[in-house]
Length: 203
Image (cartoon, rainbow, N blue to C red; front, side, top):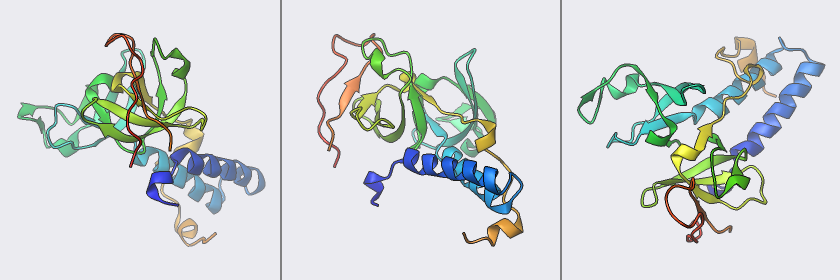
């Protein structure tokens, strides 16, 4: 499968189904179950990164969590060396969804769209970031939903249940166990008269 056709949700769905089966048949403590859970964690968290729009070097930092009550991501910014474009920062910061650029492959959900409200709650993944439009190219989990360009402020990173995520590496025994859509632009309803504008196909 080429990188262009790779869909993280396909891999995630397969891994979760396999993990559920492994838990039922082998148990939660079995090495195969632990390895599956570890691989799910790597798939989800490996792309759960953001860059600050003010950072000219586009350095992606891991997102530790999302604070729903104040609508911010808690970001591990240690990789930035204490500065963004000359401004002093700490090793952990709170960034709003509208000021970040999401990493390719990040799993997301659409929120707070007004004129394109039918997309709210739909899950997908980040394919790219369109610098000219200042929007992310989003592929949707639902294959009947066309690829769209969506503002960062209308996307939220997905955090799956703890049963599917773990920070524990597999044990040594586990490690040795070898088992052409049209893009559309989507606004939040505050940036113009049209929610959609035809864009060229991806190359």
